[in-house]
Length: 615
Picture (tube, helix red, strand yellow):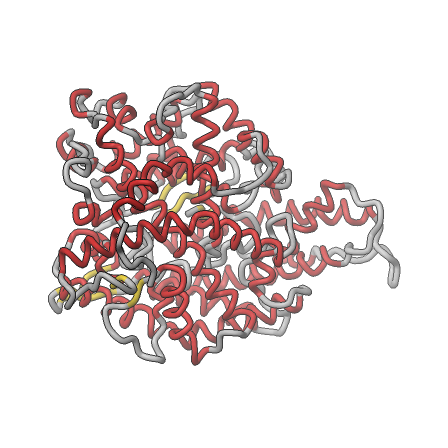
């Protein structure tokens, strides 16, 4: 997750903003003359002034957000909420002022693009009603803080969010899994519902004041296409990859049924969510040991075991991630990265452990915030988060409104496609794996299945998160139906269900950080598609001729140079231009992912013959 201010409040709370000075508050652009149509020159001046105001505003605001995320107290919550309210007011003001130029002729294309970014870049807009911004930010801060302080139960004892995530991946007792899953959603999610209902009311009105149908329509407007076209694109992409997911679901359900028996998991219908190794059933890699095929499933190594055996600590893990990017020709991370990042969880205070990457000063004060544990998952996460940091640094010469990815899916995909290169050959290159332990070709099924348990399993979850919010925002999902609609969408897209009946007044969505954190989620779905397009392109550039999933472009400076050419564009061009610069294609599509997993899909279809797939 990227935590970098692309606008004064994007995303709100996670990327708080600074209190503007009196002079900044007074600097309100006005038409050249009463009743006059603003000119192209007026628009250019307005954009230049807005960028300066936002730049100045963002740096101190990023520091406040950092302090709040790494030192959770009532005081830092209060300060963050106040600053967030001021930032929201400023962002809404600039968005409304930008809309004044909608009928201005002769706009410079660059100015027109920046006006669009100003109008579309606010995650939670507040109406201009006195007190609305303050109330919205107080609620948003409280929601994120309550998530960070959340506790579930294991054997009747409280367990924090970071630890419960780890336990969900390692515990195999279905009673303990059900206890953790249920207590987390009851304790963390359910109390948030009244606040979330109110937050939606305020932010929806703010979006309507800016000329959008609702907040979901506003979110979807930021992809160089209409909101309707974007929704259609996500449906098209899902249609491409759904057959692969369906086969993985069918196979995984059969293995779980064989392990736990029909009293826990039947071999037909949906899968019990808590059995899939992850609190949200969003990635299933932690139960690979349960589903691994005999013989081919034994890969001969486990990244967690390798890290422990080689005495890696969290800092050494981050150094390894840095080494990958350095091998592509990127400059080393600045010294301040190592002195200012939160790499491990402090023992003396509450923090937000959800991993994120930060750009504090829009130049080179880049950081990560993690509660790193020595395991394979966090090793991958480090490569992902550093992808944000290297992207941030690559475009730091762009003007303020272009200090972002080509679209938000790009930002998430960069680190992910690099992490796809964590292949056995890469592990050998950095001394983690002995050459003699590299899996032979007959292990490819296992390698692909292990990857699919995370990459493919995530796809429907990545889509349904915002499908639910779009319904909440447009009013088709009423507050009384929040829980029921969430359950229905998870069943429809994921084919999973809760370990027990959920209360009608529950709020299970609040048990996932990005809901109380108000982070749009379609970006993660797009990233799962884009990362394979990027990866396939990089492997072609590197001259790779073997199976796609075995490719590592570690050490290839040509790939690094072409990648940097895309990254340094930031948001200055429509995303198809950026995509074409690196991949040669202007279309997002799922064929690269299907090509990567083609041998696995054929194998899964063989394994599932005679089974009643679907749910």
